[in-house]
Length: 417
Image (tube, rainbow, N blue to C red):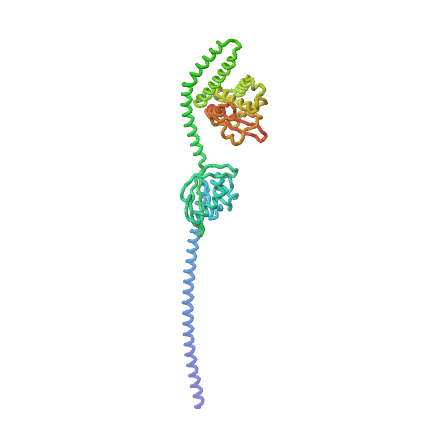
């Protein structure tokens, strides 16, 4: 019985201990579950906060990227729409940017110049010296152009040169130096200045011509009359008769020069009427045939144009000068082709001779007063012709075809002047 009681007591004690351990284990498990749930909740909150932060950053990055893209687009639009040329080069002088304004100035496409040295756009000696200028600045920091505007000369893709105003700025991008050049075409200003100088010179020449007309031309007429009287008093067969004739010829030549000078210096204002060009050209060519030294010259007039409003006497002077120049270029023998046509409201009269042509080095001087290649020319014929055509709001173009000869084209407005 005692043994049985002990066994029962031991079993009860074991049950009590097991129940306590189970309770402790349950408590520990509850604590583990609580802390795990709290950690999970914290991680969830942190994850949610991180997600919101990421979303906010992504939105901000998207906005800033859009703003940057819009700013770049605006900047590119400004550069592309600029009238002036804008060129960016690196420290080696290689072109990195070439806007449409620069394309119009130099005649190159951007793809043609990217990566090439900027001295491509410079004539000699600047073409050869530019790299040394750039290297000297990078080495010494002494700026001669940067930050200072300067007039320079540019070179187009066809080899022609033109005046430019150049402004250069320096910048650093990603630790590398860049240089930006802004170029403005000065050709219109230079042309206007030349025109103003020419007008000033012509005004002074007009004043001088008026003095010459008063002080020289009138006395010259008296001298001629006296020489004629002396000539009539010479006995027949006198050896002095030839001398008198030579004196009269020289006086007439001087008188003609005075007339040419007055016409050039003070051309009359056009008195426009309706003019038929073909009859006017034909009658002018007939006058040319009266010169005994030009009897072997033939003038062929072809084409036609509606009547234009112009001063016929002034046009006759122009046409006569051009025909005479063509005849002299052909040494008094050959055919001068005159073609008349109308295009886009402009009447064109082209005079083509078969002479040797005009050398390129003097072609730009032929309309300059007193410039001539003739032994006895005054140098006023073409200059006067240009002034008379300018007074009609027209122009004169000169071309020397590869086949030879010279083509002088007079362009006149087909509408009333």
